[in-house]
Image (cartoon, rainbow, N blue to C red; front, top):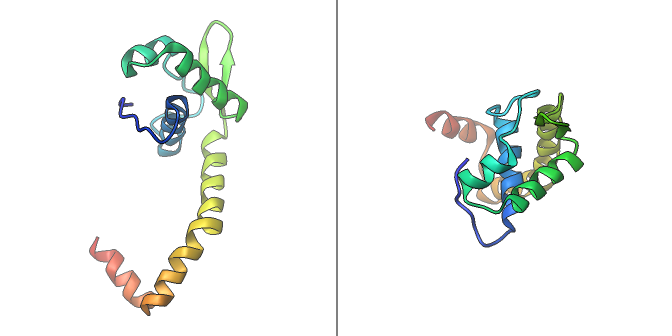
Length: 119
């Protein structure tokens, strides 16, 4: 993870989002330990309380669990739950806007498929 913070959200929220993205992308696998709060704070140049708050939110969301004396671990099924939620969000929030743009531009499925094969 890189310390590229923006001003639009609190840092703990951005850190949480980075961990969620790492789980979804598979760079943090189920059963795998998260870096310690101390290491994250040093590596990303943030306050340990900020890192701890991000981790606590991940626990509350049921994506990671704390194993006393061992650290935080990604729970089984976390990636599947995240992917399902993201798919649902895309279909409900983004797809209608994309579909409207497609209709407005008069595009058809063949053109879209042809275009996607070029990229």
